[in-house]
Length: 135
Image (cartoon, rainbow, N blue to C red):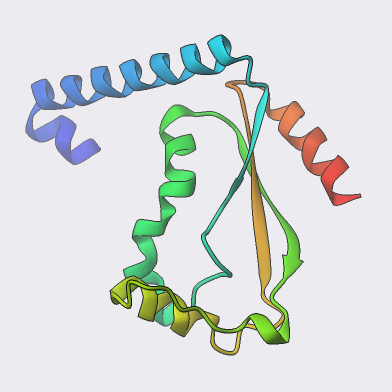
């Protein structure tokens, strides 16, 4: 972002304005719908292999939104991949299918995580929910 700010301050201001509007809309939705916390996947499957990390970066959509909004989020392992869960197939058979299938190979014991997201500045609530889920 520093590079954008130095190269084109007008574009940088427009970017910041867009971000603030997104955060404002997200906050309004949470308030309007009475959401106090969200439980979401962090990743669509077990952790990816280091060799696939570059290609799997697009899967960060599950968490990047909370980085943009500044809403607190915590990751908690809730289970592990079992021996009979080390494959992935779907009807698409595309690049993602092959990549996820590759990540699932030899994944027995890898953690499967849950993401807990709270409203802005309610970090303690997220930690409290995580503590209860952990028990």
